[in-house]
Image 1 (cartoon, protein in one colour):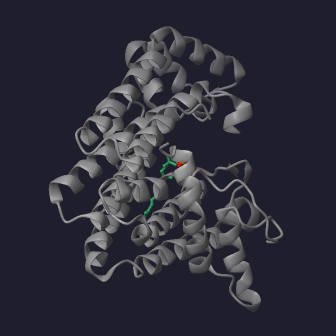
Image 2 (cartoon, rainbow, N blue to C red):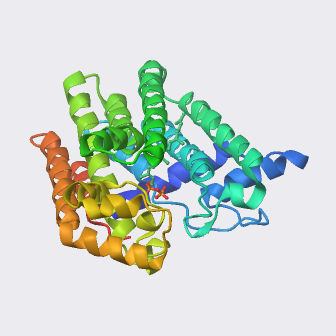
Length: 336
Ligand code: GRG
């Protein structure tokens, strides 16, 4: 019986978690508060910085990395430092993103900046990024340079994606192509790097590595589009965010951009100064009528299909490959 992706996760993640805890550390004296805030964000400490187990995120990027490594014929244990570095970069970006977006909650808990202020939160984020570099130093010597390049390219792309996203807030109109370029950088780049690094550690076959990179990128696109669907139609009890949260914040996500192109009434509503429950309900009505949900679902499915096509013919019957394919379908089909 082949192990499912969840069983593989049960094998892999304790190693990643252990590595992460060692890299982050505890700090001494006054500095234990600095490290405590990092541990809080990682899900290992409560608001008083006492040890607990809190929602820590899905650890998708480490899973993509380790499964890609094994599916490409490598020893997944060699990729643990890369998996940890990816999770640290991801968490760094969330800490900074929460400050930039003024988000009060993350993973059902108050954000770091909300609890301890912006200045300390920026510093916590910076430390997580540097700790990612420390994690990378533990990679096999012969793969270190190449993996560092992959990770730094992805980090730069994240800043580009964030730049585009922040500028979209000021723009009245955003076009679908612009939006796709934004999510390719902001979300898909790190997922592409996750699969690419895993495969790079496994093999020197560049064509094979490129297929894993492209798999991760297309999966990241599908994942973000699905996230946009949940941002409008997700269940509050499961997402932890108010219903139609993205619309309340007037974020320009894929279904909203699509509906704005279809129905000019939404464009004028979105730019209206007064914005209360009535406007939210009216806008949601327009979006529902426009077919935006069906459009977004079709887009997510099309990226997901492209992702799977990249893996076609690469020893699909191996346990790791099957688990990777299952993980991809979980990421796009998730309902939270
Ligand atoms: C990396 C140098 C550098 C800068 C980063 C702040 C910033 C620049 C970019 C923001 C990137 C960002 C927050 C993208 C959102 C990606 C996304 C879909 C997050 C949610 O991912 P999940 O669902 O989160 O995997 P969990 O909570 O499960 O870990």
